[in-house]
Image 1 (tube, rainbow, N blue to C red):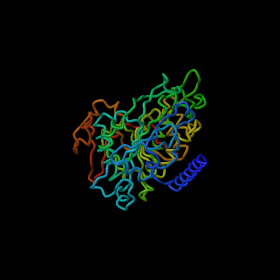
Image 2 (spheres, rainbow, N blue to C red; image 1 turned 135 degrees about the horizontal axis):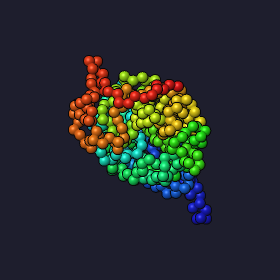
Image 3 (cartoon, helix red, strand yellow; image 1 turned 135 degrees about the vertical axis):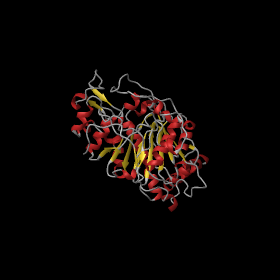
Image 4 (spheres, rainbow, N blue to C red; image 1 turned 90 degrees about the horizontal axis):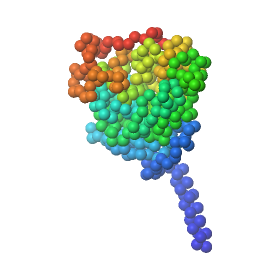
Length: 422
C-alpha cells in the first residue's frame, strides 16, 4: 500500500510539473535551471553546420538578471554553452535592461542603429587602443545613441588543415577566452547586451562537418585555394556569417521588448581597428548594404565591416543557413573577380547578387584587422578630438576634414575595379 501511494505521489508531482512548465513557458530561462553543463561529445554534432536556432528566446528578465555580471543560461542549442552579460544598471539611465518603458524606446537616436560586434575576440582582449577606436571612431561617429550588442565565440579553435581551401582550414586559431578577459573591452565600448558562445566543436575539421560550401572547383571556375587531391574548394564562410545571424536574435528581442525598430544593423569584427572616424549613417544610402571598400581581387576586405539596412538584415544572416555552391554563379562579376582569390567576401557578394540586395562601398575605409596595422594602430592612445580624427602615419598628408556643412570627409584609400549591382 505504501509503495502504491509513493508511485501515486510521484505521478501527481509529474503532472503538476508538466502543468507548471506549460503555464510558465514564457518565463525567464534563468528560472528553469541554475546550473546546466555541457556534457556531450563533439562527435555527436558532426551533422550540425552552424549553431542551431535556439530552442527558447531570452526574456527581458534574463537581461536584467545579467546586469553587470556574467550568467550562464540553460542550454538552448545542442553543443553550445551560452553566457549572457548586460550593461550594469545606472542611476543616470532611466531605462533598465529589458524595461519596455517609453524612455527605453526613445534611447536610440535617428537613424536608429544597432551595432553587432560579432566573431572571435582575438586582439579585443588585450589592445586598449582597439577598444577606443571602435568606441570613438565607429560607435560615437556613426549615429547618436546607438544600441551595442556583442556575440563573441569564446571557445578554443584549432586548425586541422595545412592549406586554405582544404576542409578544416582555419586562418587563425584561438585559445579559450575567459569571461573576465573580455569584460574591460565590453565595458569600454559600451556593450548593452552580450551573448558569449562556447561550442563543443573546437577544430576546423569539426566545424567543417555539415557545411554546404564544399564545391567542385572546376564547375565554378575557381583556380586557387583548391584541394589538389580532390578538386574540391572548401570555405567556412557560413560559420563567419552565422555570428551575425545569431546576433540578430539580440536585435529582434530588443526591438520586441521596446516596441521599436532599428534603421541600420552593423557588423564590426571585434578585432578590427578603426584608424579614422567612419562616415555618419545619415549620409549613406539607406537602401543598400554598405561594405568596406574592397581590393581588386575577390572583394578582399569587404567583410571587415558592413552596415546593413534593417530590411535586409535577416536575408544577409540567412546566408549562414541557406548558401549553396550554385550561388557562386549568381553574377559574372563573381567569376571575373574571384577565380584566383575566392574568399568569404566573394561568397557574400554572390549571395547579395542572388538575393537582389544592392551593395556599395563605404566612401572610405580606414579600418583593418589589428594584426595588419603595425604602428598605425597604437596599443593605447589619449582620447581627444585631434586623436579621434587619426593618429596614423598619413594623418598629416591625408587628413580627414569637417566641411562647412559639418560633413566629415576622409580620403579614399582603395579604389575597386567595378561598381556592383544586382
